[in-house]
Length: 92
Image (tube, rainbow, N blue to C red; front, side, top):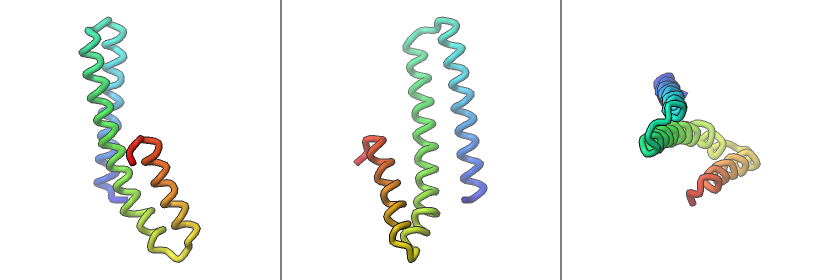
């Protein structure tokens, strides 16, 4: 995994973490509900981007290695993992 990708993922996660703390403070201070919902949506989008980056890295490293490899069981295992991710996210 490239250091740039790792750095980008960590930066986005730390940003999302900060936003979640801000949402908690908004709830504690009884902020306007729609403002809270909008912040939650922003965090969800940020996490979706992190998910995309991690999945992209996986497909270009782990999955590619398994698919090009000589072990058919490993190939099927990795393909199964990817399918499971798509099933769990409702993306088919």
